[in-house]
Length: 344
Image 1: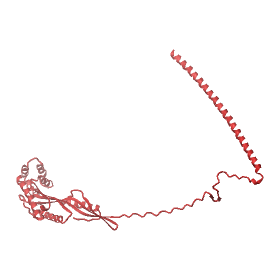
Image 2: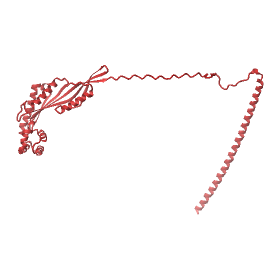
Image 3: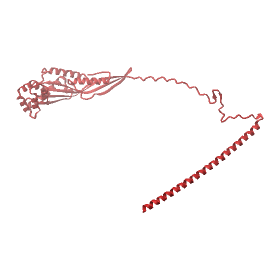
Image 4: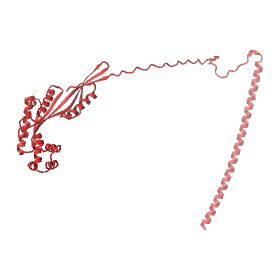
């Protein structure tokens, strides 16, 4: 029952598949799996994790008893095969340290025919008999929590077998079983149908005289997961950037040098030693006086024009005011006229 696979997903899938396969026979998973991490190591390029996957399950076994008897007959009607399968399961369970038995429930059953008190005694006796069998063979009661129960007059199992059979007057039989009559009255009604009762004696009632045993246990599986270590990709090499040529100094031009200390307009002054210096100076002064006069005349002309425009604007404003006053008087006169007419 110990299983080692390469991934957790695969292991759980195998467990589910195994549970589904066993369910068709007897073993039924009772709850979801519980995973406990045991170790985590490295192996070359892999991380190896080992875990214990635990789940609850149960195994069911059923053996038949002869009518009115509570002693097991190992050779009776399929009991040999059932007991062999039980023995195989118990042997594997005892040798597996990952299996832990929680409870063992042994239930004795009696068929619904016959007196009720007798059926109750037979059901209890059959449960005790099979408990003694597994105690002698496996020591169950010393190792596990073993409980016994009993069901007399198992009409539920009887109905299930009748519904699945091809017996005569099946619907009538089902109506009797489902009816409100007592157990004794149901038996009498069925015995009143000879063909039906003969079929039940051979095919329906014998399988009901039985003992069923359910072993509830926790089982574990050792699982190994191998995960490849993802190495980081190497960083891309930097792309070489073109080297920009340095800008030329401010005072350097493609065609010569510029003196960056010069600020403003460069005026080429006459050479004082040239003889024309005094004459040129007088010309400059005359030109300056001429420019001043021209600026003064322009300023005076501009002022006169501004005064003219201002006077025109004042005159236009007065004209507009007179028109507005005249219109107001006319409107007032019309209003009084209308008022006189209304008063009349």
